[in-house]
Length: 387
Image 1 (tube, rainbow, N blue to C red):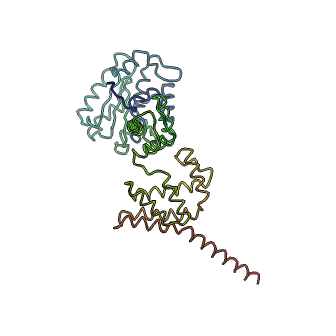
Image 2: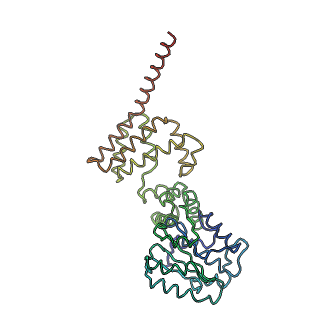
Image 3: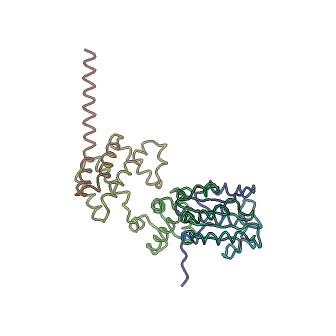
């Protein structure tokens, strides 16, 4: 039986060009290598799963490449690249600060820095989760980080930049990694699916990308999970929502249609069906707030691009937004937001959500009544002005 390799490892970027969603970082690093403006210490910070350690490894590999390509990418053929690919390079050292955070661990590292590389130009030290170092360890590291030998480069990575002492920050060139956009993650997953000969639905990939919350590693883990769940070569939207236990967009479209038609009974029946499927009332009301927000965004064609959903779902939002007035959506957001705020303190949470839905189902008629009253009042004022 062949050993399975998770997608996060199998498709881990090995060049700057293959890094997803961090072009501002990769372009700067490539220019630094090209112009020989390499800093002595780099600090890569940002959320989990966005490519900090991956970029650190690519930078370390590229710096020592003996046959650098014209596009500032490693050749993968020289001795240095081959030793890096087989994890046998003596010039690249990785330290996990989460488990090696004492003064003695840093002293051992500082001792190693004294020795020049036997082959190659640089010795690179990658320290992951550097914020886990103790204050004493940080202080022991200060002098070496400020005045390292010419051949030593330090690349520090962290998810919690605020925990690093200012004296360390001032000695590093800081790179802030962004959360990866939904469109970029969905496109990357689509490329992997093609290589693995897996059929996918665009809505399913967008849903996985949204669930990952900007972390590509999380998206790849979810992707592997859905592939295993499907037990075939096809990822469908239905399989994805079933496995991730996500409430389908269609429920929110149905609820909104019934609210616009003032059909309170149908709204309550749909909510009952949602609860019987095992979904939480609080999550439902949060999702309804987001749905109303998306409908408001669709009121202006220029802002439709703010929706992080597939093109098919965008069309649904645009169509429904034409039937919902801004007054209904804004008032609906106020009612739903108040329900969200007071949900946890409510003694009867189901009734709390149902009361909000009852209010929402009468919004349209209330708005129409107010408009008619306003028009009648304006008419009377005009008559008086003429008289």
